[in-house]
Each structure stands twice: as structure tokens, then as C-alpha cells.
Amino acid sequence: MNRILSWPHTPIFPGLLEGLKHKRLRTRVTPRGTIRFELAAGPVEMKFSRAEQPLPPYTEVYVWWKRGGFVCAPVAEVAHEER
Image (tube, rainbow, N blue to C red; front, side, top):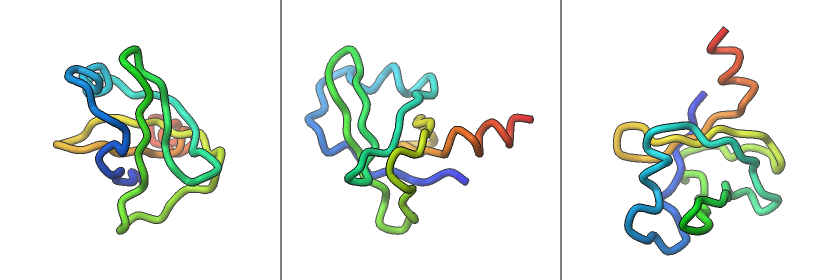
């Protein structure tokens, strides 16, 4: 099940998220319960939307752009849906 993420809490530089709008990025949930990853233009950190149930720390997830916002889903769930 896809989980909606907040807009990034890190500074957004022009073009920083463009690459993420065209592919999925694999990362893990941090111990603080955020999604953090490094892009060529710098780090990005997002929280789960208030309406979403957070995932446990260290859960491996994919993050991608979908219809005007960012979502994530556990890698295992995505693999299961793709089979």
C-alpha cells in the first residue's frame, strides 16, 4: 500500500527532485521515522503524512513521484504487486 509523504523538510534547490519524478528511489526508513536519501544536488528528508501510518525504522522502501506528490511503499510490497 502506498503511503503519502510530506513535502521535503530539507531545502529544495531548483532541479533537486527532477530525477525522482521519473524513477523510483530505493532507501530505508530512518530510526527517527523519516525517509532520507541523497541525490546529486544534496540530501532530501521527508516525513509520513499525518493521515498515514508510519513504517517501522529500517524498513526498505521505494520513493517516487505520483500525481503531484511523493509516495513510498515497502520494497517487499512492491515486489509482491509486480509478480
